[in-house]
Amino acid sequence: MKKTWWKESVVYQIYPRSFCDSNHDGIGDLSGIVSKLDYLKLLGIDVIWLCPVYQSPNCDNGYDISDYRRIMKDFGTMEDFEHLLKEAHDRGIRVIMDLVVNHTSDEHPWFVESRKSEKNPYHDYYIWREGRDGKEPTNWESWFSGPAWTYCKERDMYYLHVFAEKQPDLNWDNPAVRREVFDMMNWWCDKGIDGFRMDVISMISKTPEFADGVVEEGHQYGDLSPYVIHGPRVHEYLQEMNREVLSKHDIMTVGETAGVTVEEAKKYAGFDTQELNMVFQFELMDLDFGEKGKWNDVPPALIKIKEVMSKWQTQLYGKAWNSLFWSNHDQPRIVSRFGNDREYRVESAKMLATCLHMMQGTPYIYQGEELGMTNAYFTDMSQYRDIETLNAYRDFAQTGVFTHEHMMSCLAYKSRDNARTPMQWSDAPYGGFSDVEPWIGVNPNYRSINARQQTGDPDSIFHYYRKLIRLRKTYEIIVYGAYRLLDADNPDVYAYWRILDEQQLLVVCNFTEKEITYELPELEMAEKGEVLISNYQECRPKKGMSLNPYEAFAVLIK
Image (cartoon, rainbow, N blue to C red; front, side, top):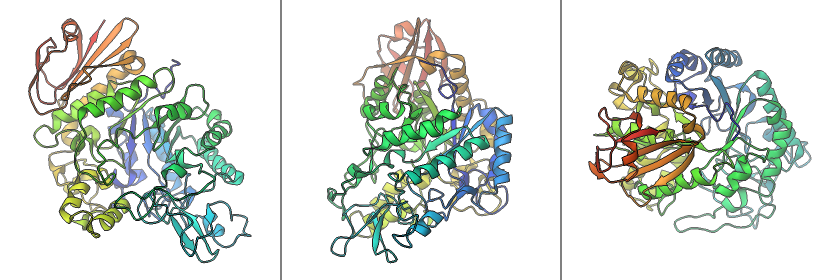
């Protein structure tokens, strides 16, 4: 495989609203990020992925953009952004921006004009349809609940919004829309950014036939997924984007591709397809869905986790590039989801990090993951801010589908706000994030889980992540080696080989709080190898060894 900087990088995702407040308003900002760049340099990351900082009414925390070439006042100014870019580059850290072009805000000038009349030059910048018998054009349900169509009195028509009604979908079939988007992207690249993470990019092409979706039990509206994901022209549009923008710059691109299969991923990110560098797939994140979709409170079985991760590791190898992530701004904290955030928080956080960072692909660290930050476990709906969470409570708890108690348990496990509580910098009030009350509550455990404590503790989760990052930069086998799953049917242990030329790397992870005897035959070979990393100080791999609760290690065998 061709070696490139973005394959060998480690990415750190920043959710600006919750990262660091520098101007005492309870909201994180660009200057706050600048003040923490030395922390990120110490961690060793190569790239910052910056969640949206563009001008926005903030219906969906910045993913509803009203001006792609201005900075939201909450975060600062364009001069603040340019300062951040320079300071990051001075430290050898690249910056990629969130690109949100499936939809805009309904306050974007394009939509303000589009809704005026069918004769307006912007009339077909968005997806408009006439109603049926006084109802929506189709029965589709928005992914933020409720109908996916909203009536516009001025045009006597409905517009499509896959997400909130203040997020109308752009009409990518209109060449003028594509030109506007590509011009904006080139503008940012010329400013010096290093790439794009592309929000729901698999949805930019819709099917020409809009038919009713299947109505699942417990839902009032139909499933729109078959009509808005991986549409008939999505690859045509991304290849055009590559020609007009991406190929002209030395940048990194990763697409958020809901519903992607391995075969589709090869089209989006294949080494010879001229589209994107890599994609985010969510098959792993969907494993703990329940009867009512996302809203569930039961973790998945390890065998299922191994099956999904192994499929992507083996079937993309040599054909397309993997992205590796446990967490992001839309997912709960991984140590609370797949680990043990109580008695074994430190051990399980290190184990999960080992399991992921020893795999093939580009790893993504979500802010606070390197500290083992946990879910918020809010106990009252007044503590939540996320539009998806608030709508779900209305649709499931207030209608009696779930009891209040069960819905609160589901939210404590899965709500996006679990990832959005402020970064825990110190044991000072509000976790050192701000000196005033933040926009969302700080997790009370900031007094014991914070960056100040961990940067000073060589045995902390933070320093464990530092070591994992250093190892990726030292051993090519971790970045480029092949992958082979071991002991597939073991319900407690995740073990796999990495192989490159004459080298082999054995990774073993106990996903339980039990001490177990492990009989893997490959451990005989490991006795003579070099332990590169382990989350227990005394680690002597051998056949029939005893694995401590959540123990993990990686052994290099030459």
